[in-house]
Amino acid sequence: MSRIDASSDSPISESPPLERRLPVRVPEERVLRDWLAREIERNAGAVDSGTVPTNATALLDALLSAKPGAAAFLWREQPIRWYRLVLDRDRFVALRPVDGPDDLLWRDVSTDGTLFGVAERVHTEGIDPLDAAGIDAEAIRTYRDELAAGTRFDPLIVRTRRGATPWFVADGNHRATAAALHALETGRYDPMPAYVAVTANPVLEPIVDRARGLLQRLAGRSIGRCGRRGP
Picture 1 (cartoon, one colour):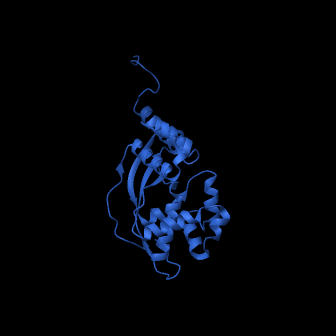
Picture 2 (cartoon, rainbow, N blue to C red):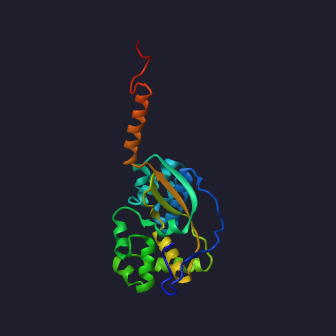
Picture 3 (cartoon, rainbow, N blue to C red):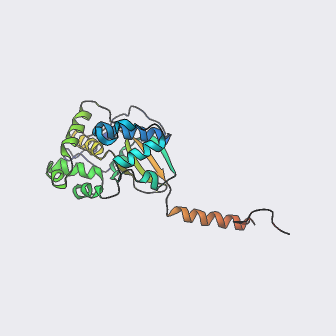
């Protein structure tokens, strides 16, 4: 990894993760339920206590109400495949703030557009850049202290598209920045868990469709016709 500890010029090492495994598919309802629970924990008024969600549709509606910007992709970019995994160092370092107006705050502070870049700026300049951008510096410091005390963070909510595209944090910008700051301060990265949403790539899909159509034509198949072919 190219990032180094600014105080020691030594590479940031990765401490042995508590779990090493390939990405595991998880149902969307599980992710939505965990995400909404965090929103309620942060803001008890995020969901009407008299209408606690009981199914996937209700969970989605509640999340869209509580996080209309960050959660918009849940209905806009279906179908979605969800995975649970532990982020390796390189993937963690490259995480970006979620698309939308809120990411402007984080990008204004970041050295390179990533959340790790936000931590780099804080590590060298203190919290003033966060305050100037309107980012909750106290939340980041609290998360950093909890991580230093051995607390394991809940999974980040990350989204990406099929293909070589960036990974964006839809929920957990403060936790990810705190983990990056902790890594810079200690020289050790404690692997972060994440739920990763993989959506279709609107650029790749037409290419795939055209390639599929070409193969079908070459195989002598008829596209868009039903019934038996005539003589």
